[in-house]
Every structure is written in C-alpha cells, then in structure tokens.
Image (tube, rainbow over all chains, first blue to last red):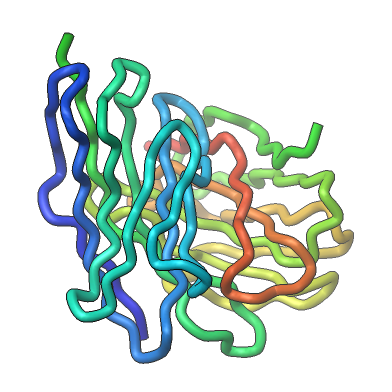
Length: 116
Length: 115
C-alpha cells in the first residue's frame, strides 16, 4: 500500500522567491512519484515524474524535484516564483504493478499563492 | 489535439435522479480511470478499466457504476445520487503499456452538486 503526505494546505510566497512544496511518501515497493498541478477550473497537468532513472527530476515551467529514498521525500522546488504559478499542487505515488491498476494515490494537495 | 473530454462540466441534480457523466479520450489509451476530488482529501479513485469490457473497483466505488463498451469511452453512472456524492470528478487515461510509470492524462473535471 502507498500513501502520500503533503504537510500544510497552503503556501504563500512572494514573486521571485523560492518555492518549496513538501511531499513525503510511504510505499512497500519502489515508488514512482508524480507532481501534478491544477490551475483554477482546470484538470490536472503533469509537472514531472520520478521513475527511478535519475533522482533529480526536471519538469515543466522551471520546476524540479529530488527523490530522496533515505528521507522518503520528493519535494518540489522552483528557484523563482511567478504569479502564474499560483495553483494547487498534488503529489502522487504509483507503487508497483498489481497486474491491472495504474492507480495514483494522491496527497491532499497544497495551494500555492504568489504575492506581488 | 490529444485530450480527455468530460461532459457535462457542471451539473446540479436532486437526490435519486439517475445521471451519467461521459468521458472520452482520443489517444487510443487502454487504461482509463475515474477519480473524485474533495477538499482536504485529494483525489480518490472510484473505478478503473484496463480495456474494453474490463472494469474494476477503486477505493471509493460505492454508489457508482461504470461501463467500457468502446475503448475511447468510459462513462460514470450514478444510479441514485445522494448529497455525499457532491464532488469534483475527473476522468483520466494512460497509454497502453499499463505500467505504473505511465503518465495519466486528466480531463477538465465535472463539478456535480446533488441537492
């Protein structure tokens, strides 16, 4: 079984500041980890994913995340926030293949606000 | 354009009135899934389908039905909706390999209110 913990429900940063969104996972098998972004009134869009190839993963819009097995973490970062980054961010885990289901287990989501 | 479409996008209905939310994808994906999103709970899987005529329950299947008669379509059926099914619903699909690393592509969502 897998689970994802996203601490806090809301993060606020100033434009130009570092964005750090935390994600910790629990998985009984080597995990595959994803970050999705949801802009207002839209569906989820993949930001990046970790599939065991490289621990530092670069995604779209300048985001990146580092897989740290020892810390069971997959935190999302961006060096400089833009106003357009304001959205809800979901971390998700897909661990192992049960023969049928590619189910994603999502965290509760974090709302990112960017102040001018 | 590769996409997952859902209809309707918004729906207000009353308790007990059967409804269907349609989902269609044009990417020839074999795997499709329905999730519901509730505040503070993230997204939870309702049902999924590996291929035509192959469906199975996710984590929160109670009160829902699905069918997969064609590869591109995966409708979600609420036979007797109740207020606790008020939620934001997302359909998703992923490529045919079916491995856990596959990216899932999400539709725009359907906001359902059951009075």
